[in-house]
Image 1 (tube, rainbow, N blue to C red):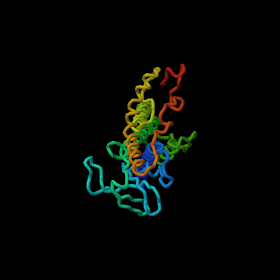
Image 2: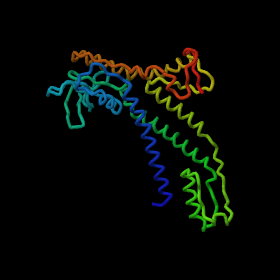
Image 3: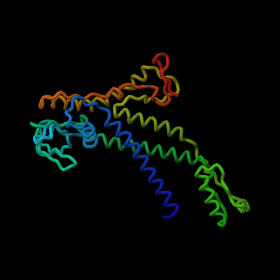
Image 4: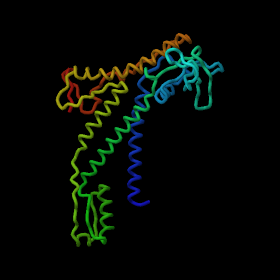
Length: 295
């Protein structure tokens, strides 16, 4: 592999690793937001939330073969009722388990009112975040000027070795005695430093992703103080985003309880409901919480 191809390969690996980091972080948040209460021991809430995240729906039913209550992936098909809900369902699991069900012996749980998954949106946010993150890396690295050097062919290998030491942030760079015999023509790229602006944009995008998930955040970029009313008003979008997913789960709880005589319920986790300014970068609470400072 040539050195140029190796550099492109390494850049691609880092791009993919950065994307996966953001995708996994946002996925963890998405599947941890809701707290299921009084679920039967045979129902795994983590598996259920993963299914809702990736597929947009799961099916709850009671297995008559001794497995008890289950909540599994659903392959819908057949006729629809007047509201577009499938009358026929087929529950399936990774181990090959399947069971044909109907609206009379099972309840569909939807991820939101659109009956869509959250995975596609999380992938979009992860792509945009990784793109900004890598742009910050490139811009910060571009400050290591100069990077373009004209030299004799006899000096090429020596300068390549010097360049490797430079890009490796070594405190001392050693050259040969012949290095300074011929003049070097250094071309300064003059790349402007915009990493700070990119970081601000990345923070705004991260908060936008949190708002989409319904997680409280301070998505206001101001250098002066924020009054409490500003912070409170900013949570309107967060609460609205939370409503669709939470109410879809609660509607399923009501149907499950009515069909099977259970008492399950779903709440939004309290840890996600309120802002703790001390945990937000650059935010402090002052004057008994009446004002918030945004650096």
